[in-house]
Image (cartoon, rainbow, N blue to C red):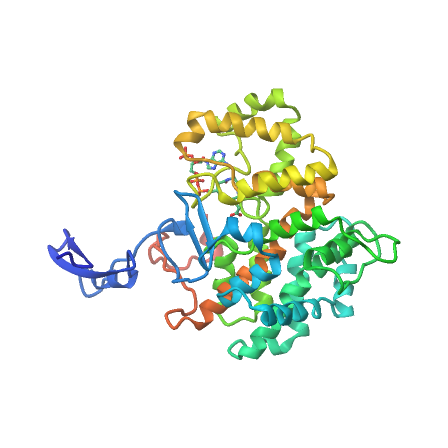
Length: 429
Ligand code: CMC
């Protein structure tokens, strides 16, 4: 009979310890009993960048990185991409089950009817330079919502959390679209309640002088599927920021602002923008081998490749490749596609990438699709932040309701100077 425990022998003292294994993990605090003396605070685990540390238990998203599996609440991403809508998927991610008809109607009504921004929020956006990055504007404006909805502080009130959830999911596209219109000097286009979530987003971005904006159904659907693929991705950098800031009991607008800021970086949500810049820099198919050689020599990275968890083809990248074909049929083939396909072909045959299990990730083809739909490069990370808001809120709520969670506070291993005495200025070297 096997026992669900781990036996540790501390060779410094010869002492033996038995710690329980639960769900394939040991609790790091069980290591604290392993001490060499009275003054010793006990053993800690050293894990910069959380390479092998679970920070929570979660029921939201399942990933098997070796097999290339992604599921929200048990449902395979492929089935959701084919059959669901972003709003339905957001409901699933947030509340754990697919909605019935009445729940879906109620959910859609509430999201649709919270999309307008307070007019004063527009003044924030007006204050930015014309060339301000839309992610910077999004971080600022969503954080500012905290000052408009002071009831958001009541984070342990179910009704308040529900209300902030509607507001956040409904208003993120409006802020994003207003930021975009500001950057191109166009008047803001207000939400249209007759349209779908993504149809309305396109309306707020692209409406010109026509009385009624009608989104192209292929582009509207493509964007909706992209939103489904980005709804959640368990404990990544931005979700960790959401949980960490939320753990201090800050309101959800502040926590979403922090998560959005984390997403801004080129190693996370900024990667799709970086992919497009990389493809433009390569310039032509014939220059791909030279570029790959440079990457292997350590001069930069192949953006859109590699993932902390997926050591196989990212399942989202497979779906995105199909959407790309549909979008290119409507908008014409993106000339950068040939460079991307050649990069993928060469990298997948190259020992450097094979050995390190580097495959295309979600960002490799999304930039090409966004560009073909007509989004400027600066908007790409914003298109990640909008759908990820549902995942962030689901993770935040799960963290708040989890009795095991406390304020996030990692340990450190101090390597600085020992105690030394203060030296007066005139005696310093
Ligand atoms: N191009 C070239 N080499 C790479 C790449 C890449 N894209 N990614 C990893 N490597 C190499 C890296 O140099 C290292 O090699 P060595 O063992 O010789 O030092 C090895 O592979 C392991 O890399 P790592 O940096 O330790 O891996 P990580 O898990 O810390 O990083 C990553 C994951 C996504 C940050 C990284 O793969 C990367 O920078 N990719 C490019 C940026 C990108 O596409 N990001 C989007 C990720 S998916 C969307 C999201 O989650 O936001």
